[in-house]
Length: 339
Image (cartoon, rainbow, N blue to C red; front, top):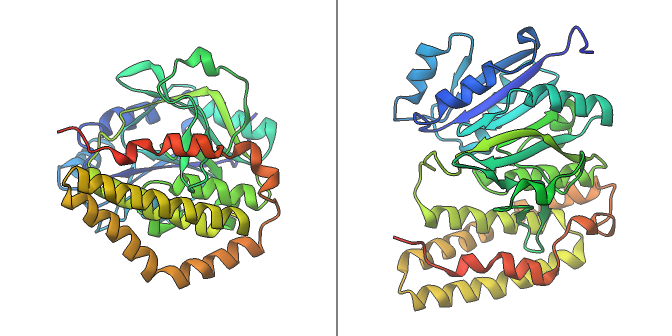
C-alpha cells in the first residue's frame, strides 16, 4: 500500500543519447506504477546530437534540465536530485530500459526490508539472457567488480539480499540517505561513482540491497563519453579507484591498495611501451598527476569519511574481492583496445 504523499523522482542523465533515450523514457513512462506517485527528470549534459531537443518536443510530461556543460554522470545526477521533489530518488543511465514492474518491485523492497540503497539485476540489452550486473563487490584496488558479468541468470538467481554495491545504471535510494552521503562524488565524472556511493553508505551503517526481480536492460556504453574513448575511460577508472582507496579503506587496506596501484601502474606503463602506445602512457600519467594535485583534498575527504564510519573493514570483508581475484579482474587494463 503506497503512502498517499509518496513521490518518487526518476533522474535520467543524458549525454548524446539520441539512439537510446526514446526506449529509456518509454520504459519509464509505461511503468506499472501510479503516475501521480512519480516524476521524471532528464538532465541533459550539453548534448550535441539532438537528444535534448527530442526530449523537449516528444515528452511533455518530463522535466528537462539543461546543465549547460558536460557534468558527467555524477554531476548530472546530483543536479537532477536538486531539481526534484521526491522522497525516493532513482538514477538511470540514458541507455537503460526498465522492466514494467521495476518501480513497483523496488518500492516494495524498501517497504519490506527498510530504507536502503537498492538495485536490480541488469542484463545486456542485445543479449537479454546474459547478466551485466547482479550486485557488486569491492576490489582491493578500490574499484567495483560486477557479480555475474556475462553469465546466465539462473546461475545467480536468489531472493533479495545484501551486496557490496549496485549499478548506477539503475539505482534507487531514499533522499534522506542520499543527502546524508552528500550525493555522488562529482570529481569522479564517470566510473566508480556508484561504487563509492554504496561503499560510503555501508560505512555509515546503511544497507545496500540487490532485488533480482527488478530487471533492467543496458545498452552498455551506447552513449558517448563526450571527452574521448578507451583512454579516457582508463583515466577516469584509475583516478576514481585511487580516490576510493584513499577515502574508504581503513589504514591497513588503504596502504595495501596503494601498493597494488603502484605495482599495477608500473605494469600498465611497461605494457604501453610494449604496444608503443603513447596515448596510453599519457592518460595513465594524467591520472597520477590528478592524484598528486588533489592529494591534500582527498585526505581531507578521508578524514570526513573515516570519522563518520560506523562499520569496520572487517565487517565488510564478505564484500571484498580476494587479492587473487583483484589481480585477475585488472588484467584487461594491460591490453590495448581492439581497433
